[in-house]
Length: 214
Image 1: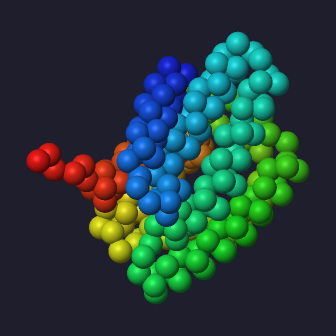
Image 2: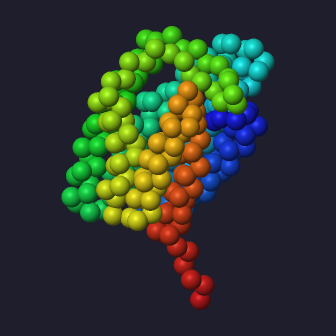
Image 3: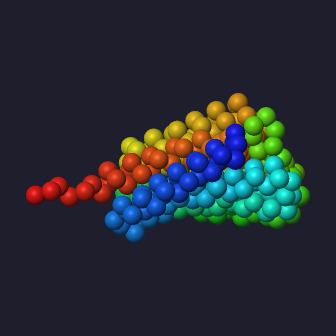
């Protein structure tokens, strides 16, 4: 996450705890992938905390290893996982069919990003209170559009208003992060998106209310 190691660890710890509670409230197996989103974001933010600490202590190999984990989550895992979670959550047939296509596209995007992540030299560094992950990554416009579609727009086809709101705010946070912090986009946007994942908890709690006391 951006800003500092302490903020990264604090956010990561809070999201991890939120994720555990969210999964505990999921009553159907189809809800579990979606309920796990805050937990995955928590792990990602804790990983960037390790990047911060490693850079500050000049532990280059640890910083590089943690950076690869962070970028795997942001560039490979999320485009594959998000549309899958949206697909599993959906109950309306036509919406579920649309999300299946998003899932297939996400697999393609993740595989493409994995190839370049494994074959491009990576240099993480801190500047202006943010982590920058510098590596020569060839990402044509079509792949960028597909990435945005699978991680944001797939939620807009949900039959749940809360899930659609999550998708819309995630897209808006993407635009805002790129406009304000294009040089550290991956770090800043993941921070915004991680914060928004508390909506996942809200959805799961509303979908599975506690039984009324007699």
